[in-house]
Every structure is written in C-alpha cells, then in structure tokens.
Image (cartoon, rainbow, N blue to C red; front, side, top):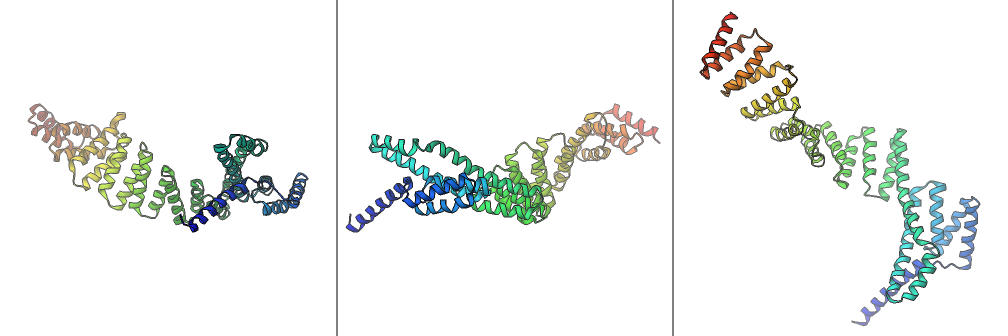
Length: 382
C-alpha cells in the first residue's frame, strides 16, 4: 500500500473513532455545565422560554448531550406542541443512544472487563435502555399527533390548513400512506379532483394492498369519463378484494361505457360468479354477448335472468320471458321453448303469439299430443 493510501486509511479510522467517541461523550466545559444546570432550573420552574436557549448553547458545545436533546424535545412536544420539531430532536437522541450501544458492542468484542465498566457507567447508570424505548414511542407519537392535528382541520372543514399540515408531514415522512390518503380526501372536498386522484394514486403506489385507494382512483377516472383507466383501476382493486363482486361490476360498467365489450364481458362474468343471483348482471351479460354476436351465450344468460326472476314463485319481468322464447326458437331449442312458452302463456293467456310458438315447437318435436293441445288452445282464442 502506498504512503498516500496509508494516510487516507489512518484518517478514515481516526474519523470513525472520533465520531463514535464524540457520540458517547457527555462531557461539557465548566460553562457548558453551568448552562445545563440553569436550563434545568428554568424548565423545572416552568420557564421553558428561558430554558430553551440555554439547552441550545449546550448542544452548540456538544451536539450529542443527551439531557439537552431530551429536554428540548420535551419542550417542543409538551409545551409548544410543535411535533415536527420535537420529532427531529427525538430522532437525534435515538442516534446518540444507539451510538453508545454500538460503542459498547465494539468494546465487548475485545475487552470484556472494559465493556462491563462501560455498560455500567454509560448505559445502566443513565438507564439508556429504558430511555431509548420511551424516546422511540415519543418519536412515533409525534407523527400521530401531527396526523391528528390535520384530521382536526378536516373535521372543522379547514381543508387548506389541513393540506399545509399534511404537506409538512410528507417532507418529514415521505412514505406515509395515511398522509397521502388524507391529502387526497382534502382535495376531493375542495373539488380539486385531479390532485385528489394523484394523491390516491400515490397512496396505492406506497401500499399496493390499499384497495380503497384504488377504488377511489377508479371512481375519479370514471367521473372524468376516462372509462378505460377507471376499469383498469377497479380490476386492480379486485386483485385485493377478490371476493367482492362490486369491483368487477364497476369495472364491467366502465369498460362498457368505453365501448370495449370484450373487457366488459369478462368483468361482468366474474361479477356474476361472485353474485349469482344478480339479475341485472345476467341481463347485462346477455346484451353484451349479443353485441359480441354470441347468440348462444346471450340466450344462456337471459335464461339465467329468468330463472333468478322466478325463484320466488312469481314473474316480475315478463319481457325477459318473451324475449327468451324468441331466442330459443331461433336456436331451435324446442324442448326448452315449451317450458318458457308455457310460462309466457301463464301470465298472458290471451297471447296468440305464445300459443302459436308453442304449437310450432311441438310440431318441430313431432309431439302429436302437444300439437293437439296447443291447436285447441289456439282455436278457442279465435
């Protein structure tokens, strides 16, 4: 190794150990100790405005001084209610404490006796383990308090103020899904649907399992009449809520509005699988199948709709029955036509069309008995 490289390595080692030793050092000058004592007295006497600048002087001398960091964080948290600033000091404090633990682990590797002494003086005596646990909770609670303050603004319908709060939170915690979701809700309340959609998209990107965010994106695209995107996002939501037929139904409706019968057909098929008693979906599938020139499927789904309709023992949608009869006749499904033709005749016994269709079906089946039956019925109607 060249002399130049050796010097760089030595400088690097000194820098590493220098940072580590500085991190665990709580030493202060005489003036620094005086400032710390005075600050503690002012804080104990409920004069935080006088304590704060003194604590800051302590940190100017030693940025890693635990008491000063902890008390400044407490002032911002408990007294000022500035949770963003409090969080910054809690984070700094966590770094210092973790540095002390790291130093202890390093010493333990080479000198068990020195490590034991270090632990007693620098960890056990100041109760750093308990402090670390507490500080982490306060750090996390700062975020909760910030979010709650934004929620309060929403409750009071102060949406612009809420957005300012959430914008600040995003700068601090850029991967918070709850923050983006609340931002989206604020913009929705302000009728800024583009921003609302964009923040819901960000929410979904950060948390792919958030089906609600995906549904909201889909809904906003639908309102903009961007039906393909709406359908795509409803299908994304369906991947998470696989047993919810509404996602597939809404996707089918979106694709149908976009004029994409193929995608719409597939989505509605899945919706009917999950909600097999939904007559509206069955009829919609029948109509789309007809658009796709699949008359067999169209007839099958209309037949499904009729069966759903008569499940309670009465016929509510007579038009479905009459239309089905014509479809069955066209497909030459005469056995089934007899069943539904009889149904047609049951709710409209004056319909010559129904009887004529029944007679023709029985003739195609070469069923003399039925031919005579329907012929007599037809004659009686003359």
